[in-house]
Each structure stands twice: as C-alpha cells, then as structure tokens.
Length: 344
Image (cartoon, rainbow, N blue to C red; front, side, top):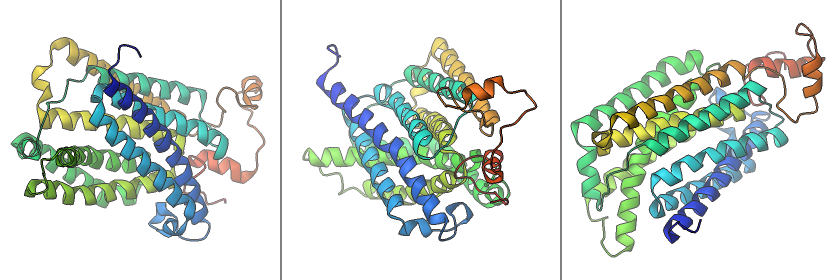
C-alpha cells in the first residue's frame, strides 16, 4: 500500500465499497422480488409488483450507492485497478445468499466461480490502457467512428433478437438470455457513463461541457440503456439462483465492456502477441468456469462448510436425500428464486 499514490488509494477504497453495496443489493433486491411474487405477478413473468416492495427499493438504493462509488473510483484510479475488484461483489452475493436465501453452490460450482474470477482477472490485468480523453467532443469522435457504430448496431440488433425471439422461448430456463441482454446493453451503458462522467468532471473544474449537444445525446441514450439493463437483471434475479447469476453476469459484462472499450478507443492497436495470447487464455479460463457453473447449478450437494456435506460424501451414488417435494422441485428447477415450479 505504501507504493500507491493517494489517488489510487482513494480509488481502491471506493471500488471495494462499491463491491460491498452492489453485492448486497443482489440479495436485498431478490428478497423484495420473492416477497412481491407472493402477492402479485412475478418479475420473471412480466410483472412489476416489486415496485411496491420496500425491500426491492432498499436493494435498488444499495445498488445506486455502489454504482456511484464505482463511478467515482474510475475518476481516481485506472480501470486496471478498479475493474478486477468488481469480482468481490459476486463473492459477497454468494456468501449472503448462503445465509439469507438458503441458496447453495455445488463444490464444482465453487471451482467454476474461481475459474471465472481467475480468467476475468487475467483479461483485465492484461487489457491495454484506455486512451485518455479530456472532453466530450473527443468521446463523440471515438463513438461516431465506423467501427464502433458497427459494434453498437450489432449489439442493438442482437439484443432485439434476444428480447423478441429467445426470451419468450428460453428466458425462463437459460440464464444466459437475460444476463446476455444485461451485459450487451451494459457495454454501451459504460461508454455513455464515461462520456457523461467526463462532462461532469470537467464542468465541476470550470469547463462547462453541458453547452455541447454531444453531452445531452450521451445523457439521453444512457436512460433507455440503463432501464433495459435493470429490467432484465430483475427478471434474471427472480428466475435463477443468485450465486450463479453473479459470476456469469460479471464475466459477460466485464468481457463485453473491455471489447467495447477496445473498439471505441482503438486500444488493440498497441497489443503485442504476448498480450493477445494471455487474453485468449483468460477467455478460455472464463468459458471453462462458466461451463462448470451451468453444469452444476442444479446439483443439490452443499458447498464446503455446510452441515450436509458429510452426508453427501458418504451417501451412495444412487441414494438421494429425503426432502419435501417442494424443496426437490426447487433444486431441479434451478434455485431459490426460480420460476417453473409446478409442484409448489
């Protein structure tokens, strides 16, 4: 810590605080979604009764505080320091889900989580430095170049296909659909946040950026991007196990955000062969972890430290624990907040 600048120390503290608030928000919001689902139409089925639930709003406030802290962290420290610390939020979510939502990860799910963390950290640590920008006009120049316009167009088209084609068919059974929409829109949201953040920072320094139309275009685009991201994150939380959503969302969001940043700011022009191979290795590690998470998310064996672990280790492979029918259906259908539980 002694070799770090004061700005980096401030950024580090803000990033850790952000992870605590964001990780907690997943659990608090899901508690609200679960309570709202007992009195109205579930979010996973298109309902919005959670808007009347205080727990959901408490989680929303926690997430906003976390995002503000994360935004401020980027103002003090480089992305190479701040971004990997976002992984702390999924660890916090998994721990809190264990105690407050009674959600469990299979032991191989824990290994998958670790692989996701390692792979994401490799990619982030070896990602190129972002191009420094000093005005909204510079960001506008990068955002309106053909390469980024093509990327943004493809993202919007892909999101549209997911929403109108695949959500009705697979939204309730494949978490990658909801999380994919959140992550794709999130990659565009971050670019808008960066532009608006630069405008605010420069404006507070005495150079008013809100006199330029570019600032307002980024601000207007930010609103629907955020709302879409939030809507489908709620659906994911209401349908699937929180401990699985957190790492998958982190992996996809981080990867797509780095990709968008590389395209927009042309960071890939300064990559050498070693960096590229290292990043590819990181992606392979992430994909391996994600595969393990998907394959083990419905297994009922508790994680290390659970009182039922010894029973699961000594039980015959064909033997299954005696549980109420409703609990069995929860495990089979994918988690404590999952949909599609006809027996219950």
